[in-house]
Image (cartoon, rainbow, N blue to C red; front, side, top):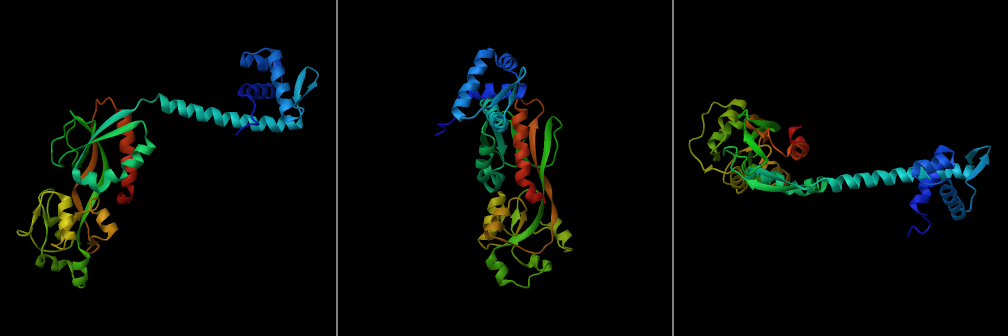
Length: 298
């Protein structure tokens, strides 16, 4: 393979001589003698079977064959130089471990299935994932960056909004099929599953124009993914957050009821300390998160 390729030094000598039109100046550029350049050119002419230069006065002028070959070799050397530069840059970047604190619900529904793509695009960053409850205090003693659901608060930390969610009701396909004429006003007469945190049904009732207080009965779930699983198991209607329910809707485990949405009371943020020593890795991770979440924002 590549048996027709001459040594790289020969190609560099020819490219320099072709560009400068002078063997002596080409030798000075490459720290070679005039004789060495001349020898390399003759070797290349013997290999190609073509005259590459002709003397015109004191100048060495390219022949038509030499001009064509010079362009091809210059392009090939430029490509090779760029490839080696990129390789050196990647090798020179020390692999960093980025400790990410993340709510279990977001990790299982959105982040973990997509981490392979992050590692492929950012081989110099190893993610160390640490689960934390969505309502826990931000603690950076064991994390470099946290995915936080709620509202921007602590001024000692940097908050980067990733996604503003909406909420809407969902149910199992079986329930939807058995209630084809269901209206928003009918919902209070059916089992409504409740979430223990981040508000309840009232914001969506208000958006739908339903005069009804917060449900006082029905199962309560502390984990938002358990809430969705209960709805998929036909235990009632759940009020879903758009990010967490995405996979359930895509797979058909759940179906959406109505086109009415209400703003969720929280947003997803990437939060990090101002004095982090891994600012570049944090920025790359945040940019990647923003890109994968952008379809939901749209």
